[in-house]
Length: 470
Image (cartoon, rainbow, N blue to C red; front, side, top):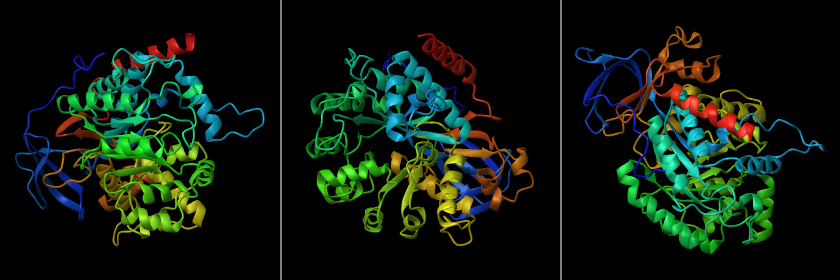
């Protein structure tokens, strides 16, 4: 590709603008008759309540902050629904799924990765995400050889995001080993691999174009399985004081046991003891934590990146949500393997997993006077914004104007009062609660329609047909 020839962004509407909503979810809760003034830079200038609609465009439903997607592997969108054949011994786990993912990845060239990512990003926008943290770990060609430009596949991700109009936080992944202690990578991991030197060059290349292409850049040591302590130190040293740092941790019991065998400590415990974990960090999954790990992680003010539908699909386990929120833990949600591309489903699965475990309802509430749906959405939007390094996730002066207009005509939302409309969208029978989506002050979705969805879907369909034929 493409770094200098990226696909064009969507058409833009002139700013500033004024919007009026009968109901809007603000940081202090739901408010009536809300005037939203958006400046030329795509950020909110002023929010007025009990305002007049005069001179403003009236939106067609309740307004909520758009959800940041903290964790995506976009290419896995095309794998979703293709791993349902049971193994002969009926012992399918995350680890057998991983082998299927490796085999699938062998069939993806650069064009396919871009086409799949663009489709995933359009679906994210239609689901209510306005931004995505792309945990980008496919760097090499199908044979494991580097491209002429080490950043080739990263540029394909950038191009896909620009085509869709979603705000991108690009998280290039350092991946060097198969397991703890620096063991050699397997053949299936050949497309992921970097040395420290080649990763530093990749990072510098991406940093040079981040401003031009308007993505936020972070770093992502894949996991303690895939990096040694020395390599981890080099990778996180690349991050500036405001740059996101993401890492997989404690997703699987087998991973925890292997970490203990290697180091005498659990993954989250090891990171807290040996890495400068702070507000920049997002620990993805963190499914298997003990109380003392939760206490220290929440004190560090890091974010946990939850992908509840993927964690359920892979049989990972149940996140200790109630204890985590009791400690004022910060979390965001992401679509991860993109089996579901829908923040409402992520929050539903998160809350329902707690109900099944604890045999109670309305577990993850936290805020006095707020419903469980409103509380979950607000917390996930706030934590997600922190994790992807963007001032979004809230409707407030100074914040980026990323918002969702809910569809009042969806049968599940009919006649719902504002304070419970998110509960209806999350836990009710709604399938398409999103009407409009704004990204940085510009509507990229109107009446549920994305202006490039047909051409992006056609390219995706052609890609799948080519892969099937091959």
